[in-house]
Length: 294
Image (cartoon, rainbow, N blue to C red):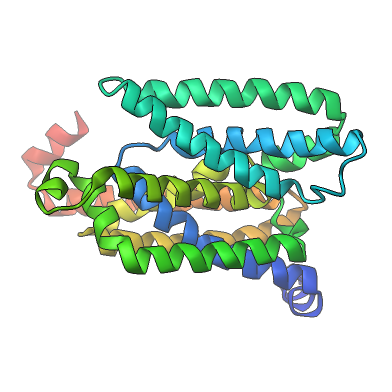
């Protein structure tokens, strides 16, 4: 009964259909960018950029309390700018600490958290804080939808043109240099793409969950994939399934859509891991199974 009601509302209410469209697009974008993030061993970076993007959102809300909201009616605008700035800061610190590159993310996320707390305290927008921390794809408006479509188009175009170079640099920067690929330029291009995608995912997934939507489908895809392309394809399929079932669970139980989508992602990962482990045991001799259990 709930399922029928869900599909009835889905095709009769524009906001539900818009949420589904946004989820389907982000379901492709998130693992596409996330696969490169995993290859580069930067799984924590989406959280970092999300926190720094939140600085822009909180600053925009703070400006609205000063009566200058007409300049920045949508927090997404400043959130996107600050996310890109955060990405550039990460690259700057990564080059400054070449042997300790993870330090860059700690510095940026600390700065982002501190500034966000300051601006949110001055903005006095407690409801907005919850939305941007946990996300709700059902609140997607036309402005946000246009931002997702433009971002998807630009990211798709850049991957069509520079996809091979970005993947090559991500897997082995040294070998890429021998092939004549300028690693610094393509790292910068990818960082800007990642920053923009994180900022447009902020409202739907929230700061606390944006990294999960990027990384967990890829982690599940890695269990079944035999190459980078197959892993990415499987990750996108899992991501889309999590969006569809997540929206249904969110509608049925009246819980935040971002949390529902991530929960479905986790369930898929656990199921895939258990099935893969069981299948591997079936193929192993009994002596090796005993060693695996130990």
